[in-house]
Length: 389
Image 1 (spheres, rainbow, N blue to C red):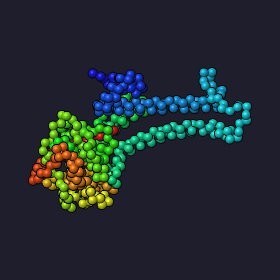
Image 2 (cartoon, rainbow, N blue to C red):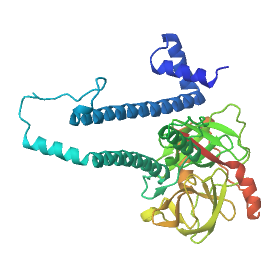
Image 3 (cartoon, rainbow, N blue to C red):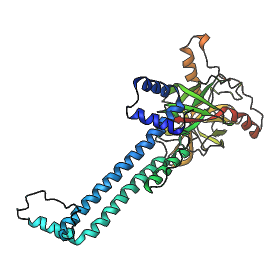
Image 4 (cartoon, one colour):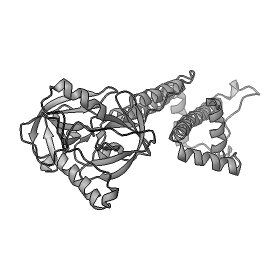
């Protein structure tokens, strides 16, 4: 069994072109077929790239120190020992020094300490700016194609491991133990059919190389996109694991008609590692800037809620959470379920009846139950969608 050191030695040989042809082809085939190995190689590439950049910065600093020392030696030749290096002239030393050069030398002699401090402050400012930009990228809300804030979430564990690595490099301390890669982004998805098809928002999976679906009891399945409707921010996924045996009968029906203004609604989602419940009311039958494919709802939603189900009091699915308005935290938007039904119908029309895989639930089991009982049944059909890039 290969250890972490064995993997890193293999990846390093591969990156430097030191693997023989058959070994290289075998590794490339494994990287293409094994997502876990591909993620391990991505982690190796990211870490070695960071260390390489750090080495280059250290080399540049040494060169700057050498130039600085040579400049000091040029101004004070009497203090130079035989083993020290003196800055050589770049022009003929017999030429007369110009008035401008003389003034520059006088300025340097009088302000040497000030310039050195300014250079140090500039270096610190550059590092502070780079770290600040990285934190801003980590915590900013994902830009959306739809005019409002999209709500896929950057994975906090990956952010923490990256920050720990940077802090260790800047302080020249020991490298942290590599963390398990839990994905770069996450959102919410829910079962569409009992056969293993799910729904999420398109922007959640946008740019994904691979997807992992994780349920309440930490059951995990690999999934792949089947179809995306960019205009209405919808994506259909299919579980690809052979061990998956089906969801069983879904407890909710998918409503093909319109919901009523003022109707009480609720949602489940994963803005954190644990599932979060939210409730409110349908505040408009159109979305951002009057888009009739979306509802506006008064439910507080956060990054990670995208792709979650929006349900009415009877537990019928009426929408798919998409995002929130930039200047109104309580104004959220959800794609209407009628557009999801139309999408599924269009896919069905393109397939023979015998190959039709989309058996949508038409009868719900949640009507008449109290909200806690509804949530207990729903939780097994709502998932974290983890995105790897």
